[in-house]
Image (cartoon, rainbow, N blue to C red; front, side, top):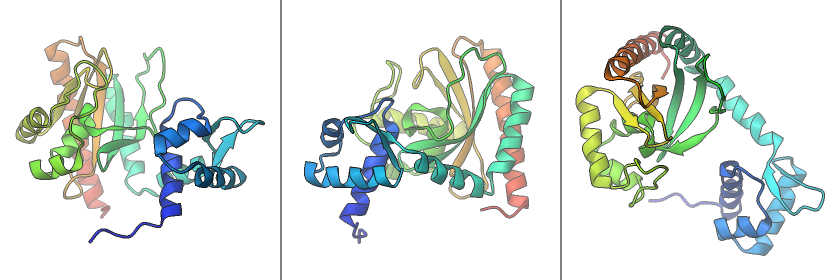
Length: 253
């Protein structure tokens, strides 16, 4: 039986999630269009969220964005995660070995949530990733974690058709489940330009939970030759397995 949701609480969370996903402040009309909530209740909720500093607005209250208290909550989540300290050490070691940008992320239903990133020292433009959430099917991180589920679970979890971020994104569920079969067989995921043009990514699940909820990935130029991708893949596998063994030894679940 599905749990009964409290309407006002559900609407508050949906508002915050919508604002967090928007790259720019949103007007009340845009929020109403995106959420489908009645304008009267939306207006009351926004007024409360602004007063509590969960939402920021301009002097005319014509545009709204996520507020500082949302950051406090997100930071508390990171601070209390027992696996994160070990994952950050692993990312440091992995980046030092391969020189590419590396990530640690967790599956959040049909998305992946980035919890830690170490940028390549040669990166000309650093894109903040921590706290960012992307559809699982467009990332190697998401694909390697979706592969932990059965095909039936994947189909029940993901929308159909799948959202496209680039021309290379897999948008067909049948094609995706076929790709996940290959991921299960080889033990790692590889995607090329499915989420970001010009970027390839390899990912390995951190096997300290069953099914695995976390993964480590490396982002690299899509034009990297096969020998380079193989070297990166071997390094990601090695460091991720070492992290999983450490977390199991520490009793972290």
